[in-house]
Image 1 (cartoon, rainbow, N blue to C red):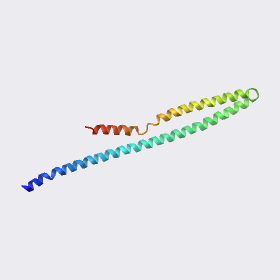
Image 2 (cartoon, rainbow, N blue to C red):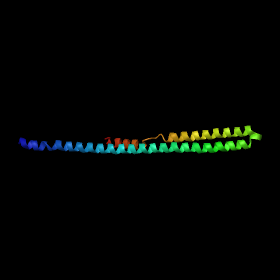
Image 3 (cartoon, rainbow, N blue to C red):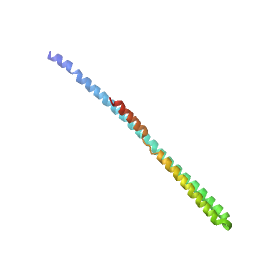
Image 4 (cartoon, helix red, strand yellow):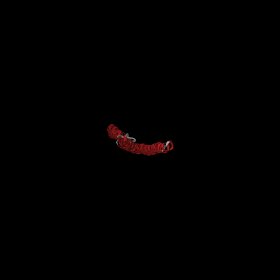
Amino acid sequence: MASENRLHADPAPERVTQALRGWLRDGVALLRVRLELLGVEAREHALASVELLLAGLAVLLFLGLGLGFLAILLTVLLWDSHRLLALSVFATLFLTLGGIALALLLRRWRAAQRWFESSLNELRQDSERLLP
């Protein structure tokens, strides 16, 4: 009789242990997938930030040089008759364009601040699924 009780008592803890191992394995797999998603998002955001920085530098360089040479050309052409007017117009133009560029850059910067949004949404959904 005692040997029969031992036979019936052993499978239950073994099933619980297997269930816990399965649950733990699923949890680790879920965590691994979420971390991979986090890594992919970090890489995408880093690349987008570098691309944005390089594009901004190129725009600043080429437009700055182009506008500078245009301003010099027109100032030299108008030097004898309207030199102060030409310098005032170009100073106003450059300051206005700089302000517009700064406003656009700040708007783009604020839009790019939402890092890891997909990962946070997935983790939020996971926690909602685990709640009873």
